[in-house]
Image (cartoon, rainbow, N blue to C red; front, side, top):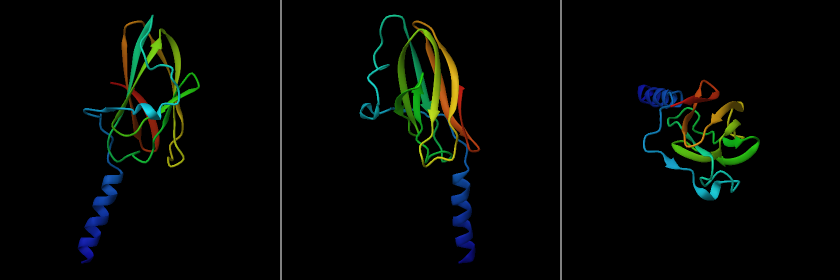
Length: 134
């Protein structure tokens, strides 16, 4: 019986520290969770920024809010994808953790050019969120 309990605990702990993986067949962030009407539709001189949240147990309790130039856009959950239509320019991109998350806010600068697509992954390493190109 002790061996069974030990095995269950070991498997549970191993799942909690598993690495994040790129999302396959990610789902769009639900439209009702968006906090702004901006960035939803393409326009003149726009490019596309696609942020895909990694899957896996690490960071799964975190649902960070994505912000562009300080404007809160939408929270992004595990395995979701957020597509933003941005005018060609340089932007500050932030992922702000929710209250259930031990990670700190991250910020990066991205360059959007007309008619181009930029893909970013949002994942976790240790207790830190990070954006990586995909």
